[in-house]
Amino acid sequence: MQVTLRCACPASYTQVATSGGHSRQAVAAPGSSGRRPRAIYPRIDPAVIVAVGCGDWLLLGRKASWDAGRYSCLAGFAEVAETLEQAVAREVLEEAGVQVDPRSARYHSSQPWPFPQSLMIGFTAEAAPAADATGPGAADAPPRRGLNLLAGPGAVAACDVGLLPSEADRYLLPRLPTIQVDTDELEDARWFHADYLAANLRAASSGSSPPSVLRGAPGAAAGEAPFRIPGPYALANRIISSWLHERQQLQALEGGSAEDAAAAAALAAVPDVCIDEGSFKYVLLRLSTADGLHSKLLVWGDSRAAYHNHVMQHCAAQVRALAPDAGLKLETLGGGRMEHYASQGVVSIYGFSSAFGQAPHDVTAALLRRWLPRHDISVAYNGY
Image (tube, rainbow, N blue to C red; front, side, top):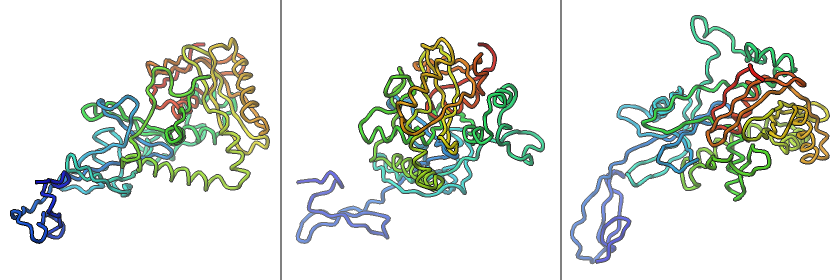
């Protein structure tokens, strides 16, 4: 007797939904002499899977059993007597220690997962930014903005080198919630910036190497597995791609005119971060259009440079080569030193530049976290 693999019943039978869709029953074809089929009431275990955003950042995690470099949305089974939205908030809090308001959860789409008999139900949700302060009266205090986001030597350095309040807002906000990983559930969880995700997904779809922050080195940093997410067959991929598309649409609406788009393209031709391995000098720079209406910050470092000015001159030469007709301008915003060890996933930022002054290292670290999300980055204002 031929048996179909799909339903494990004789090939002469067909499946029909019965009991209002709560069961499936194999029905014998007319004239067949098969035995009376049995009605099956399959159990379905609903599981939520969620892309948690905070501004331009997305929370992703990984299990220890996964291939190196693979990250995905957080997920888990719904429990008895809770809504799917409550399951979203509970799973994110349990696995990553991040608070999500269940009211921010929005249904995206679903995917059957037959082994085991699960139904993956996809959501997007928003995490509230971390509070500026805690304690009595903190809830009534106005949120900090501009240079007030920096404190102590970082604030002094920002004022000395001429960091703009809008630049502090752009790179230091939102204040991302601290992640506390439940190691029984996940090996790691991180915030990933939309620019990093977009660049890596573009590279994956085109078969090219992902962008690298290492001077002259394509792809992932040495000793670091390439970043990737589940393939296009997976619901996680669709949710992440949809979240990213929405962020890009929002940026396009904020971009305005064709002139704004052209300026953004010229600035994008120059990498935000270009550093080395080991110990080296670095410079924080402002790259702007000729009219000064559009700008972004750069972090460039070079182990070959004897002086910070050499780093700046090398960056200027690369700007002329990458955007020769754009008329872009470079300004220094201080410097310091870095120790970068990709195989260990660590970056230390410290020190100052005799020529350019001390950079606000907290801003440098914020920019590095966009492009090195799997690194642990520390800041100190002492040392040379």
